[in-house]
Amino acid sequence: MAKKIHNIEGIEFGTASSNTRYGSRDDSLIVKLPPKSKLSGKFTSNKLRAAPVQLAIQNLLNLSKENKILLINAGNANAATGPNGLKDVKSYCSQIAKDSLIKKENIIPFSTGVIGEPLPVKSYLNAFRSAMIATEEKNWKKAASAILTTDTKPKIVSKELKIGKTAYYVTGFAKGSGMIRPDFATLLSFVFIDADISQSTLNKIHQDALSESFETITVDGDTSPNDSSLLATNGNLNKKILKGSSAESKLAKIISEVFKELSELLVEDAEGATKKITVEVSQAKNLAQAKSVAFTVAESPLVKTAMFGSDANWGRILSAVGRDKSVADIDKVEIKLNNQPLVRRGFIDSRYSEKLASKEMKKKDININISLGLGKKKFKALTSDLSEDYVLINSDYRS
Image 1 (tube, rainbow, N blue to C red):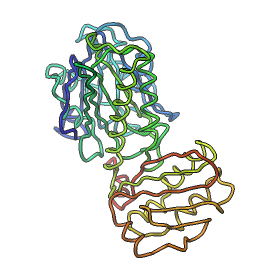
Image 2 (image 1 turned 180 degrees about the vertical axis):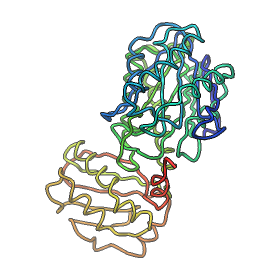
Image 3 (image 1 turned 90 degrees about the vertical axis):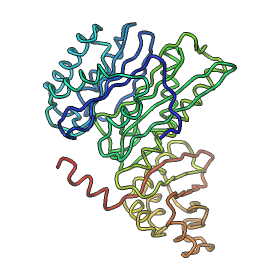
Image 4 (image 1 turned 60 degrees about the horizontal axis):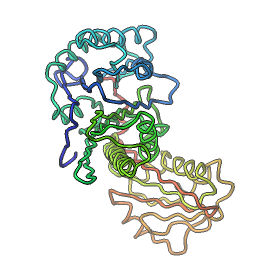
């Protein structure tokens, strides 16, 4: 949670409960954005795209220069619900558009929760209407909490950038603790900028930030039909960012930092996680190989369970490297864990110490460094361990 949360002028949040899956807990969020705001959306690569994702993609292409509204619900994904699912999401979006006197294309829906169950439209519509009349700029914590499913806590990051006498603010929140896999990671993420940026620049900043954050994390190697990332400006004309300027570069860096910190918070709160694990692959022949090896190791159930059990079983890490199709041989592979030598030239390092390696394995932050000895490219993936709690959470998710 951010120590200080900077409000974004003109952007307001309201929450309410649909009184469905989570009882009286707020599970419905409405976000109001001013007419000059610009939105950039990136969505799941899963072929099973939820109804709200389909409509959000369509509406983002047809935004008009008037107020815009985000509708987010937790508890029901409205995915794999057929034609009725799309009909349902269009229904409540149209109703909110009428209530707000804006075009229906300016309503952008997002959902997260159980797949395959019909959406209780009336319940969520009532919640959105209740949330509509209780919006405030400072409702960040309520907003971040309302979108949670199996997450244990809200995740908010807020930063300030000063250029001369002008202060630019970037604040965002995200959810997602299971079904997390890059391309891109399973999540709902909403980041807001107090500035005026062109649409093309906003889209590029968004894609670059994703490639350095949510596209580098994995919890279980799975993806969701509802993955959504939104980057939005409030269109503050007093804080105009010129394309190609040093101010754009500085702001892009701050935005990327917000995305990175949010992605780290997701991994730290992964379902049943007790450790945060960084898998860094270096000396790869190309970036594709570095990524492939990093995710092969990061998503290995045997590696992840060894991490949970604090078992310095280096053979599991080496085996994962060896089964990656991009690796022709392992004769040049070197592996270290928290700087403790494990493997050299494809077998146990002569400096290996079971005692020291086991001591490092008990730590909450684990760094696995893998050198392929083939080139100069590198890539870093972030993951978690795999515990009994992960199995318990996902074995009765719908119960």
